[in-house]
Image (cartoon, rainbow, N blue to C red):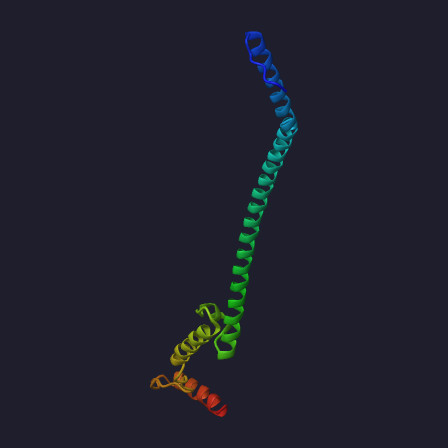
Length: 158
């Protein structure tokens, strides 16, 4: 191709028009699937939003589940502690009613507390009750006879 100088405005417009046409064709060829890609991106963004919503719902459900599990585990620990307290109270000779008064987190702590409580409970009952009345006998003959009779009953049981 030989170079032909452009001398008129019409020639210049023709050359520019051809060049613009080639450029538009190249651009159309290069970006021809733009609308299709734009549509796909829109679909993907919609799917992403749906998945984000599902993920958030699943996270909330998981949090509720975790809270329920924690509450149930706390209940189980409470039942296990109560069971250990009852068992230790019975092993140490404490009355069943005093089992709930025991404190401690571990079994060893509960056992130590039970031993202290046993000492306190048995300290008060350490001296046995007298088998006979220690009060002086009264001058009333009827009362004296009744005391003598009850002493004779309790002394036979010795």
